[in-house]
Amino acid sequence: MKIAKIHSLGNDFLIIDEEESKDLKEKKYLARRLCERHTGAGADGVLLISVQDKKKGVVRFRIFNADGTEAELSGNGLRCAAAFLYFKNKIDSPHIQFNTPAGTRNCDLINRDKNRFELKIEMGKPRLNSKDIPFDDGTSHEKIIDYPLPIHHKMYPITLVNLGNPHCAIFFDRFPSRIEWHEIGREIELHPFFPNRINIEFIRVLNRGEIEVLFWERGVGETLSSGSGSCAAAVASILKGQTENMVDVRTTMGKLNVEWDKDIVYQSGPSEVILEGEYLASS
Image (cartoon, rainbow, N blue to C red; front, side):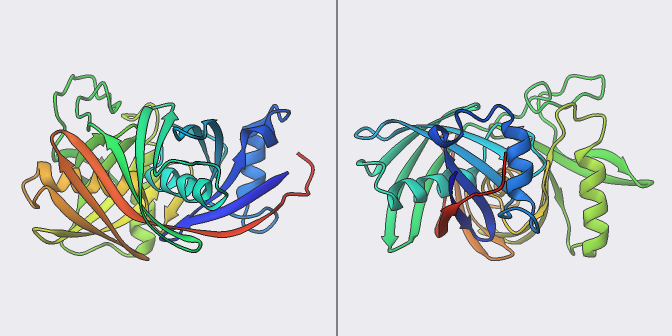
């Protein structure tokens, strides 16, 4: 089975054309095997893509996390899928329409330098209602900003955003130790108030135009960056009045730009095609 590996600021994915996997019934099991860092190809997730219209740039998109669960969306994953499509000349248009489980997301090619691509993704309109997150503490909330969530006998004020997938933002003046924020992330991801689990962003506001973020992704754990997580962190910062509507998000391996314009969130950043190959292990 042919695969390719692409990363965006260290958030890495394996891409498979759906034609390659149409006979594989258990895609969740395949994703777990592929993503395993020692006995598989190693990645944070697997992207399944299917070009539906090459000329118009219409593509079907699915994503499976490293633990085999299927997610609704991934900002970095969309940009990585776009980079692969352009690298392999599978799309004739500078514009791609991705059809995802979370709805349609549009992508524009900004720049290309050999196997490196700069791309802009439309991430959609943020949803803030507790039903849309989803978040269930027995009460309906129009917005959830600085909600006191108890973790390890300590209250953490959380702000929740859904951008096609659910996110929990926590703000710090100084980040906890790596062991500590991993424990917090794991506890929040599996907290009973989140029936579908949740992604967590640990945020430090640097100034009105820049934030620094650490990412704990649902079904993966720590990742070096996250596109949808960067967007959620920026939206949470804007909701709390701590930044302007255009924000540079500093991740472990570089920056993404996020803009919240007329209700729609956009994300711009790099993706790089690393390798192509053939997966030989039995499915």
